Length: 574
Image (cartoon, rainbow, N blue to C red; front, top):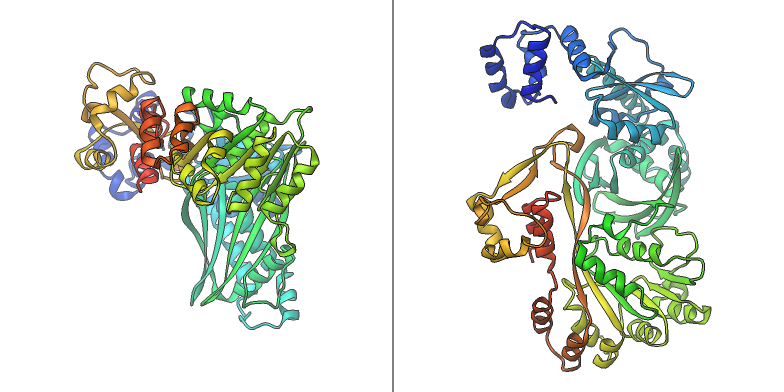
């Protein structure tokens, strides 16, 4: 999508026959047509498509190719999965040795080109092509998927176990499942939801924390798809009445991926949810996680201590495990013995002894933690403190010279302390062993390719006022952001949002990062714990002594242009 200014420059440079009045009229039709200005100019008959896009390519310094009448080999076309090709308007059309030629709607998208290079293992040569050429080429993917679906249309949902196994191994079913998996990987999905309804099978991906419908498949292939995933996960094919959990691995070029599979009986069949886990992924640094300077310094000091407890808290899906692995990555040195007990093991980390909890055989967090203490560890990570027994063992380990990392499910950092007391842990033990408590949420980051300035309108300002005294915003930003002279009140402050573009799927967001609340257990907090202070009293003390709340941390990141006010409000609203 080119800006109107760039199109004006192209028209002027190449003396194209479009008057200013005609250009303004075309601009007025962009929103209604739902297409970019360059396509509207062609649709309105003002410019010939091929010649115009050749001029665009020349202006952008890119190569141009026409796909009309070009024979594209099936094995080359399928180097980029169909759903990915459709989402990003990109087609692989020729391969010479290790060079893959691709036609794109946006050949300046270096991020996508690098992504494809890593995924395909080929050097990418990008060409601009006309939208009509790309549309025609993309129809070939649709035809192939329809062929695969047609082969299994005669299937019914009541196949015998032997027939299920046979159906799951048919090339058509294998291709459909592979397409779903590969598309999820290319789209950066964290979870795949396969949901049966009365008449169809709905596929949704969770991308940047938000569920997004991506395709609908015929009901007739439901049994085959379910059976295929069960076979991959080594689950029982003939079991349809109880939940099953499994795991399988695939490799796409250099990336090894594990899928954690959960199958649950529902009214119209079996719902499947698959969590994507990138095996061998490097832990993120504290900067990459999104810690601001002051909270990061507190975390760095805490993890240098030889013993004590570091707790990370937040709801499911708030990135707690990722934060713990990042801390483990910092601590993971040749002279340090690190052991974990997890449920499940989400990332494989070289140099760390990782154990998988298995309650069916009595291997719980508590029993695993007891065993770990006999393994001479320096650092212990316990997936979650769920009960009094686990809490007491973890705290005793922290008292006896071990650094213990774990998670809790609470809404903020101060609430974690009464929660541990409610589990039956004596307050003086908590006060003595806890180093820091980190509470967190995940917010979506603004797409940097369509980022634009935003001033808060009255409805947004009113929503924010319910959560935060907006008069205090200048004081909050004082040490983090340099305000302009005109930004005196919240209504005059400049924030940011994404306009929506092809690179972010028109959402305005790309990627996620954390917002944090880091509670340092200092002498004052320890006294509060020992006197059975409430979470609110601890929070008031901590804020008076410099603690940023998650909302404040998020507001700073919104002012810095990393995320939006609406995202921060969405994830912190109770």
